[in-house]
Image (cartoon, rainbow, N blue to C red; front, side, top):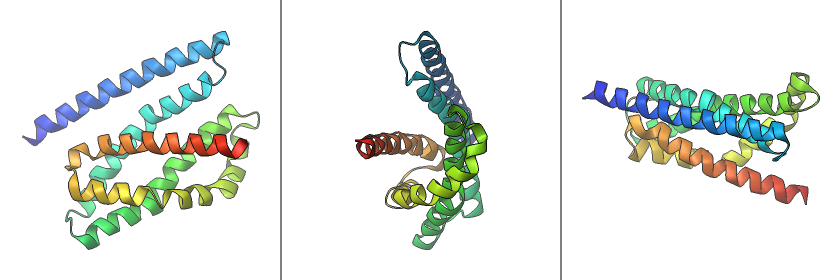
Length: 169
C-alpha cells in the first residue's frame, strides 16, 4: 500500500541522491586537478540538486497536496500559483546563494543578485513551471510528482544554460 510506495520512493530518492553525490564528488576532484574548469560549478549545482532541491520538492509537493487535496481546475491552478509565489523563488534564491559562494564576493553578493535577477528569472519561468505544475497535479500520482519535476528541472537547466551561453556571445 501507501507505506510500500513511500519506502520505494525513499529508496529511489536515496539511490538518486547517492548517485548525484558520487558524480558531484567526481567532478569536484576533477576540478581540483585543473582538467575541467567548470567542474566545481557543476559539482555545486549537482549537490544542491541532490541535497536541497530533490528533498525540498518532495516535501513541497507532499504538503501542497495535503493543503489542497482536490484536483479540480481551481485547485490545480491554486497549487501552480503557490508554487510560483513560494517554492520557485525559494529554490532560485538557494541557487543564487550557491553561485555567490563560488564567486569572489561570496554571500555578500546575494542581496544584489536577488534584487537584480530574481524577478527576471521568475518571469522567465512563468512560461514553463506553471505548465509543469498543471501536468503534475492533473496527470501524475503525488508520489511521482518529484521525479517528474526533477526531469522538468533538468530540461529547465539546459534551457537556462543555453540562454546564458547565447547571452554571453
